[in-house]
Amino acid sequence: MKRRNFIQKSTAATAFLTLGGLSMQSFSEKNTKQITILHTNDVHSHIEPFKNNHYKYPNQGGVARRAILVEEIRKENPNTLLLDAGDIFQGTPYFNFYGGELEFKLMSMLKYDAATIGNHDFDNSIDGLYAQLPHAKFNFISSNYDFKNTILDTHVKPYKVFEKDGIKIGVFGLGIELAGLVDPRMFKETIYLDPVEIAQDMSRILKDDEGCDLVICLSHLGYHYTNDKINDLKLASKTKNIDLIIGGHTHTFLPKPTVTKNSDGENVLVNQVGCYGINVGRVDFYFDSDKNKTSKGKSIIV
Amino acid sequence: MKNTILILFITLLSVSCKKEPQYLVKIEGKQLPISAEIASDKTIEDFILPYKEKVEAEMNTVLSYTPKDLVRIDGKLESSLGNLMADLCFERANPVFNSRTGKNIDFAMLNFGGIRAGITKGDIKTINAFNLMPFENSLVVVEMTAEKVTELAKYLIAQNKAHPISKQLNLIVEANEYNLTIHNLPLDDSKTYFVLTSDYLQNGGDNMVFFKDPVKLFKLDYKVRNSIIDYFTEIDTIKVELDGRFTKEN
Image 1: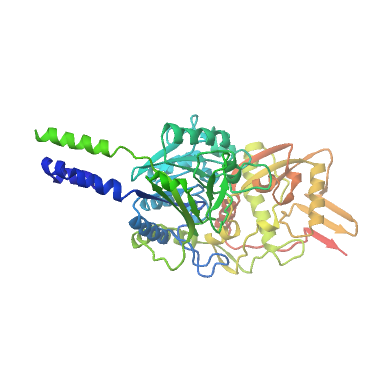
Image 2: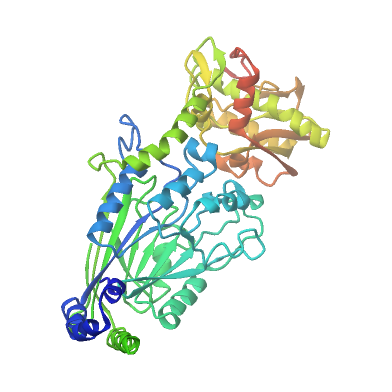
């Protein structure tokens, strides 16, 4: 729908006359909407595909291929968001040489919409991350890292609401506990806040205050641990109003997204696509304005 | 008049467009592999190229030369590559430590698993240093009690493998006895020792628990890989021998 063009090109009179037709077309015919979410995690500076003779991932991955895939999906559905769940940095000499500049520039070229911050994104210290921010034309979202006493203050958003085809998509981000994992000299005065409490707050703000149709959590907490450390599956069970948790950190290659229950007993999707840009996750959400259709319950196909 | 109609139109449009509630009816999720079947975006490839060329040029810079293959499996409880790594870390780190504290490191210890690749006879390039040490571990000096150093020796004996240790430490195992010397002196229970290792191992990596809770910890802000690169840059031809610093006699 290019309404702005339409108004500009038409005279007022014809615009008025065709109003009926327009509204018929836009609201009765097209009452199904589709939002596509594409996501990566733990790409770890993997710019090029793995070599042909790599023992584990021969000829897999590569940003130039990811660009084509993303472009094709965007052509198919322009209402697409491209997200990353952290650990963009560290893993190839590209990071050692350029400190993340190339990673951010390429992600900007691929038109990433947002990313959260992983523990390795502090590897050149919080100052190293800050220095690369001008190369990133996408948002950094982190809700449970309090950066107010650091150089990143105001450069990272606690959440962001995207609007695609009239559907409001709220995205918030969760980072892993840094103490014990990252040298304090690297993260400096970043304060880690409890991810469960923050997720409860964020999902309420996004659902109730911002009126989002869809709530997505970008998490770098990890998919699952055998100890009692917080992880994506636990997070899902302790929160509500989150539709999708996009995970990272544990480099978990899920064969398909996990469907689990939230604190209200409703379904939540948890997905993670391993690491190094080997895979891209895709989740499509279909909306309908016909309430009768929801009475049959929402179907989840994974 | 025209404007009024237009405003009216826009108002009507926005009223009739007032957000109809949307109900989520279906979700589909899947993983898309990035395989060779997907074409590569030329613009992206061209953009990467200058970065790639610079990295490759740097990686192929010749730093040093080795007249023989450097591997971690040419000895039983020591290796040419292990000895080299421990000795070069000591050599690079001690001046840094000394200038900051006025003290000297007693010996260095790393782990066998941390030697990630051998170096083939011939030119040594920057990429060899990256392959040998792909991790971002940094050097630390752990001030340890003699009791903890004894634990360290017992760990080496129990593990029975060629963990890299520097030449200042000598450990000879005979039957159920062992003889440990540091700088040719037996362990002195009344003093503490300054042991160089990586932050990874100091944090309990490879079960080296004796590095935990030290008397004092000194972080050198010096990456293990950078010490390797600096050493190779400085030394024209690498000379390294198996010298029996850790042996078991039957």
